[in-house]
Amino acid sequence: MSDRRVGTVSRGIRCPIIREGDNMAEIVADSVIEAAQIEGFELRDRDVVAVTESVVARSQGNYASVEDIAKDVRNKLGGGHIGVTFPILSRNRFAIVLKGIAKGAEKITLMLSYPSDEVGNALIPEDVFYESGVNPYNDVLTEEQYREKFGFRKHEFTGVDYVEYYGDLIRECGAEVEIIFSNNVKTILDYTRNVLCCDIHKRFQSKDILKKNGADVVCTLDEILNAPVDGSGYNENYGLLGSNKSTEDKIKLFPRDCKALVEKIREEMLERTGKHMEVMVYGDGAFKDPQGKIWELADPVVSPGYTDGLIGTPNELKLKYLADNDFSELCGAELKEAISKKIKEKDNNLVGNMASQGTTPRQLTDLIGSLCDLTSGSGDKGTPVVLVQGYFDNFTD
Image (tube, rainbow, N blue to C red; front, side):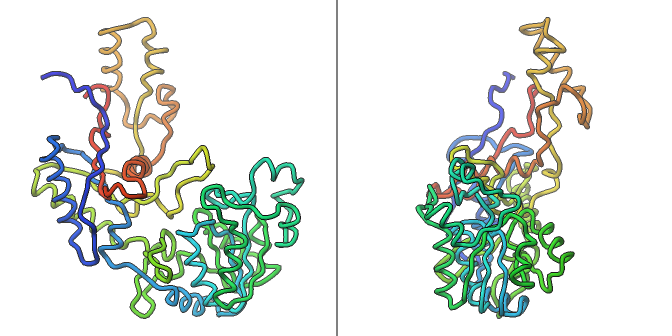
């Protein structure tokens, strides 16, 4: 048998357009198996079958309306003056959520972080901001002060001035609005004691700070629509986090029951192929765009559900370290044999081992989910399933 010359391969798998009520396990298995037959590749043990969260949520019919959001906001935050802190700047992710929040309040004090939001969308270009003399750690700006300092600024990708856009949206929904700029969540308590924390990855810290400093009611986005409202969709773990715009008055929520789905897909693939595969549901990848400085992860997690074989982090040795240090005097077949022997004898836990330095200990689901997100894209590729092969191979395989 000749040596394998290919390591990790990521394939986008084309599928039918998914509709509510579709059998996802059957569709995913059909699509992967048919792709292998038509394209002439072999399925193997420990292949990873990954399904994008959007088609899972669509098959579940996990949708909610602006009015559903408004009703839940009124019930949980009182319907009066609400502070809305640290939302991301996004027409797709947050604008329609903000519409629901505004319909559930009489007045909103919208507090934006600056010079960018939590995931890196810039309100103000870095060079302009740092020449302004504004201290982002201490200074609180009103909308008037912000305009005096920075004027009207359109986002380089969307062409939207988000300060104007969010303010107009709130007013159009019938609520009064004031917009302030601060990076200290406690600032909002100078305006109102009922707060909806809209940050994603630091939401628990924000809520804890506000509760310790005298807030009356504090909710995070994962506490809105964490149960059905008048029969709406919901997500018991993430609420509105991970939601996307579906129509002008409806959102698609993050999918539910993902663990059960991935196990069902795994069983389906085993029964039909005899292969023991890993399966995951993935959303946004966890990577940063060097041009726009945007950190892609606007979902609460990369993967809301995965089989047990994807738990943990890689346990890898750095080949270039071994070649340059432990075996610097070797070359050719001797070098290959020495490195292969080292890999086969490696410990199960390489923490602190110099030969593993530079192998960042990210979770397997974050790494593979990011690869899948890049493979499937977010546009018209039509590949909501990704097959990753050879990910768990190493130099000796």
